[in-house]
Length: 188
Length: 186
Image (cartoon, one colour):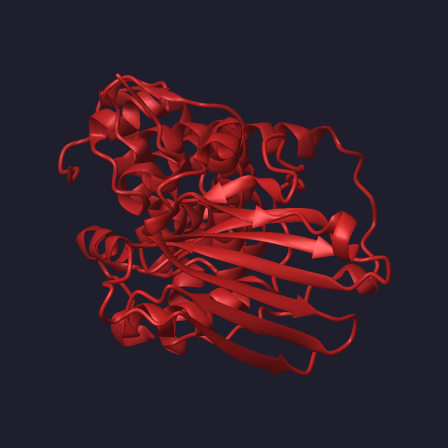
């Protein structure tokens, strides 16, 4: 330490300006959640009208979380490319296991089978009456330049599903596969 | 005039954290201060009048910091139990010898008189221009320059083992609205 200790004011200034200590990850996550909440609250009034332009959907993801063993089930639809697939499975499924940062979206007034939230024209499903899974919260994240919207569903037994839709570019018809399932089990 | 884009704020977290750490002297307090600062900024839409985001964040950081100081000073002082004592930060760092210096440096800055500390943090830690720093701290540019000069001098003296006496620090803070002594580095 003594070798690098600043001896003059000039060295001190250089040293202070060279420090690149990064903030803890926990703080980054908290700030991201605050930013996402702010972005959502200003966008919330537009969510019901976001339906449309379904061809711009990148892929769709979902995860299920039980009380002790955490199980994420990832569903990929309309795959847009190899790189995007890697992002979706590894990172987006992680987001479905995180806590909600926003209030639960309500049932859509125009479509009783959907919630009031949509990403690039694809609405989140309404599952309460048919399956007993009511929406319990939501969050928005940004990964790799894509916005990932996650809605959480909870049933009477306290189990939780995280359902994420990733905004992205449409898949070229020749490369697109109709659907793809990926199952991730994480013993929590 | 433009509206502050919440998404653009995330890029400033690291710099604001370093500034908060130098103001508070502890990582834990710095985390709280940064979180509180962002919560304030994001509580409602903000309009920037041609200002840089970082300048705006420094203003809010300063206000939040001063508010927390005032709140803490009004709080009744209680004794500390053993279980309240925080253990040393267990987080690993990439370069241990640098982490030690950073911690020591920021702790030294945090011991400066408040006005000196804010000046040094705004310019040297956060990287604002003199003009931006002076505006964000609500002082004249000449005042900021003087405070900055004295702050640097005091930190350098502390780190080289030649610390000024407390009464000398207080006298310097009182005099800091005066003229910059010759030889000050801008």
